[in-house]
Length: 171
Image 1: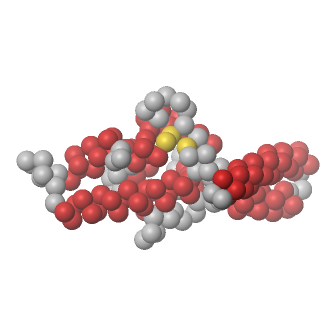
Image 2: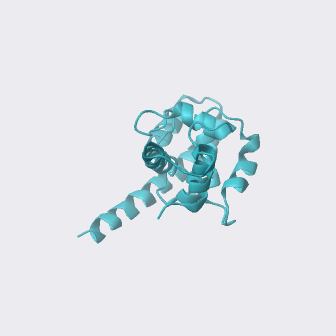
Image 3: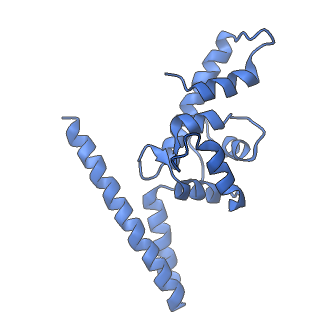
């Protein structure tokens, strides 16, 4: 069904004074929702169906946003207080073309189909960190980067495993 919070956010912005909405606006609503779904799936790099704080942090990084608002925004979006953001909560908080910091940044980074530029997949994050670790000369920093690589590698493997399981379930 349609996310109630999202409906309200969208319709508050777009409905006429008597509360009516046109066919074009309804179409625009579905298109926006579809784009938000594509962006959400991209941000949800471990494919858990939720955006956790780490993934939100990566989004902020990709969008060049200061992370000092990260906790506040996570709290605002996370309506049920489970420390992660569902698609419904995400769609209820982001109005494309909206005026708030995150909405603005998402709108600007979004291509025609809804994909966000600069948001890295887990594999891309891994490749980037690997290159950084290779180039690092300071042994302390190198060790830290290698630890991050190990964690990313484990995450990549668990995503691959759950994808495989999902694939087998389809048969």
